[in-house]
Length: 111
Image (tube, rainbow, N blue to C red):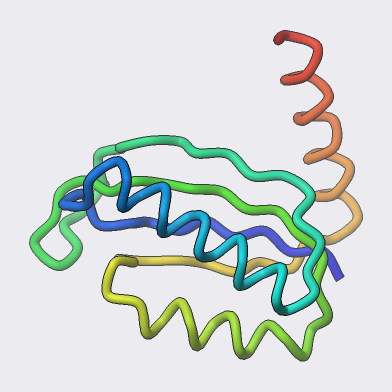
């Protein structure tokens, strides 16, 4: 199954800590035998409402294929990490997959 996740990391982390956190979740996905299709760092963004007394967060997007039985373990890891303010894991339907492919193709053509 194909999923997408957006992870909101706390803004008090340094650039190195942000990169290490993202790399750690890449490795977790790889250990869970996931195939990472695409990822994108969206940077520091203002939140629409305050979360844990923070007004901004670092956003990172992952798109990956993983067996549904591993999602529970990924969800648990994300919930336990204090560096993460919020996250979501969304199962993509066929329309979302096609849209995502078109989006990636458009980005590649513009580079």
